[in-house]
Length: 279
Ligand code: SAM
Image 1 (tube, protein in one colour):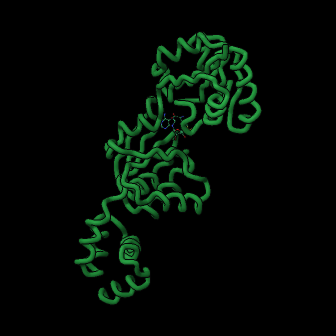
Image 2: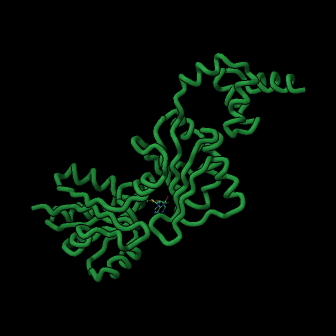
Image 3: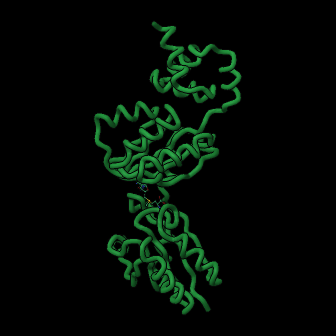
């Protein structure tokens, strides 16, 4: 009889968040497949669990996936863990799950900590509907392109981000989405956890004076309903349209850009009109 793959969520900062079922399962399985075996060894030592470990991460998943499948076929039970949180969610595991399904191997998922879900519960934005995006690409042009693709989504958008890329990601969000509401959740479940709820441009000012440190989840409010705004804009002069965005907290330059987009005109046309009237 084949063994079973257990997907085990582990704490994202507070060891007290491990579930009873994950502990029982880690004690029961024959093998633990871990993203970083040194990291997982510390977790197992903390709970006094001794198990053989096998590494399973992005760059060895092809070869190690086959090894794990063979162990499962030989009747061994395997727990899959990542460094923190729920495996498969912006972490290794997707490929292994597919391989188990293809090979008729049973899988059980043991729910537990996940940074995205923890962030959504704290963000204070619309949480009835949200979209998990995970990490944006590293390169600015690719980041802008992917943001452009999702800018009209009305649901709260959830991103993971590393501290050294936080400011550039906020700048890109501001450039593509405009000055939306954002919740920045830092170091969730850890001693120095922090929740900032502000606009994107306020967040940029905040991090202009404070270096980002730690782990971050960003929750950004979804796109506003356009049709109502479109009706409103059609009854406005171009100057009033630009002022509308300025009053919402956009800079004059950003307001001109947004007005141009709404009216399908060039920024230059709007700029010339607004500036001629002002002078
Ligand atoms: N699978 C994990 C989960 O379920 O949350 C996510 C793994 S992903 C490789 C790591 C990213 O998750 C970090 O860069 C950060 O964006 C987010 N993250 C993980 N732990 C966090 C924490 N304690 N506070 C804030 N963000 C966290």
